[in-house]
Length: 301
Image 1 (spheres, rainbow, N blue to C red):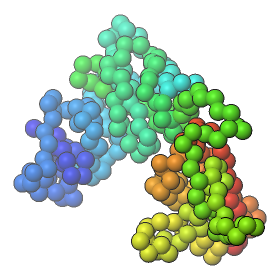
Image 2 (tube, one colour):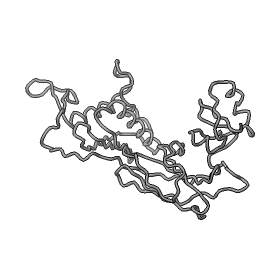
Image 3 (tube, rainbow, N blue to C red):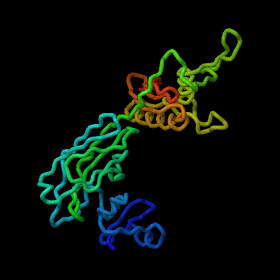
């Protein structure tokens, strides 16, 4: 056996090049060791393991056959029309049909793990139509050429913003959607008749989003994780790092606490002057309508 996998760290090691940092003996003595059949780099990657940085390096450092390397595919391009499919095409420097070369097509939601899903194994042509992307989102693709047990280096990673598939449902704006609920308005107040102000539909939902954004975690005694730290941004410098951190924080909070009422389509944060603008585009699940909300946050320069 040459290659050893570690189920705990999801890495695999080359036993002929192992380093002290690999801690191979500890892996072999525990219950997290994994062997591969066949015992190849290709099989380890196919099973979802990543190369150890100490004994194997990065994916780009891997050489599957140093004596006669297999040329890599190139010029990977793609298109996502918005119907849950993605079309890909690439080029190859040799006559791949005559030389019995096939292509493995991978996709992932993370650029750091491009080999997470093997979408199309041993594909015989230099183009492919993939399905199953109805949820949409940032998706990363790469293609590896293979001939038998030999594999090439992967293509450059292709990043596509895949549109989510929206159900075609007609809703009359003047008629409340079935099942629409109402609740306390935000902010809390008493109307002209002395009653507690109530709201329904989109005003109520926008109020809930604002409550979530402007609540500091810990303020709600029985739900200490509720909220974001957006109000703390007033003390932070206005730059791209702050914008990226805000985008991640807001997206995670919306999906966690309002995921039953909305589907978050996009959170875009832009900085300008002394204000950080947070644009939220979401799908209201009660009537499948798309809405947009902008929140301006004052920050220091």
